[in-house]
Length: 308
Image (cartoon, rainbow, N blue to C red; front, side, top):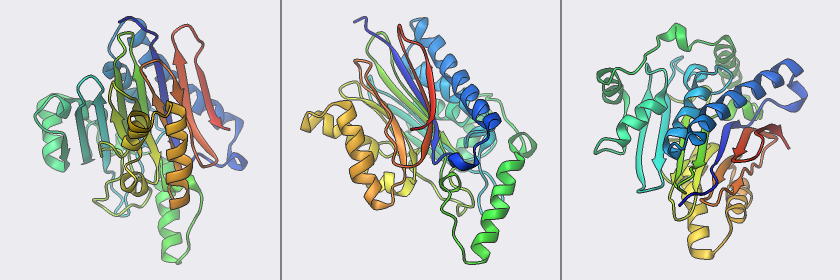
C-alpha cells in the first residue's frame, strides 16, 4: 500500500496563559515545534517508518528546554528529575516504556530499546543501566538544569507550604509527543515527559502507561496524550479512542473529541491529545486554554499552533 503520510506533534497542554505569553516566547515555542516537525517529516519524506518518525520528532522536543521532557524536565518535590517515556508501533502493538529515569538525554531512545526487548515497561536504575550498556548519550544535572524549572519548583513548594494552590495549568502538567502514519499505512506513537512540577518522588503519570497516554494500532489510530495523568490512566484515554473507533464506528475526530471533552473534562482531566488514523486524518482536541501542537501531511505545508 502506498498512501499519504502524516505527522502530528505536541509540546504539552496547559500552556503558558495567553495573558502571560510574550511575543518572544511565542516565537521560540513555534520554532521548537517546527524543528520537531522537520525531524519527523524528514523520515516520512524519505519513505521511512512511522515508528522512526515519531521517535525523531520526540528527540527534537526532548532536546528543547522549553518543553517538559528531556532537557526541559520539571523537578520533583525533592528537587530531582524523574522522566517517563513510551513508544508504540501500530503494526504489531509492540511497545516500550520507561518510568522514573534520570541520565539518558533522550528517554524516548531508551523506550525504543525496551520495545526491542522482551519487556514493555522498565523503571528506575535497571532501565538507566540498559541505556548505559547500549551507549546512549547521557547528561548530568547541569545538562538538565533550567532556571525556569527550578524557579517553578520553588514557587510551587512555597505555595504548598502556605496551604495555597495555583490553578495555572502550566504548573500541573506538560508532556511532548508525536503520532504518525507512514506511506505504507503503518501507525506509531511516542510520548515523553518530566511529569508535574513538585510531584512526589516515584509518581508516574499516563505517559508510559500503554493505553493511558500512548497507544498505536494500525486497525484504528495512534494517540499521544498530555494532561492530568492520573485521570488519563483511570479513563484509559488513548485506548478508549481506539475502542470507540473499533466498536462504535466513530471517526477519529469524533472519538478523540468525545474522550477529551466528555470523559476527561468533567473528571478533572485537564489536557489534550494528538491522534492520527491510517488515512492521514489528524485530530488535536484539548479542553484547556492551549496546547503546543503542530502537524504536517504529504503535499501540505506544516503548521504550528498554541491557542485556539
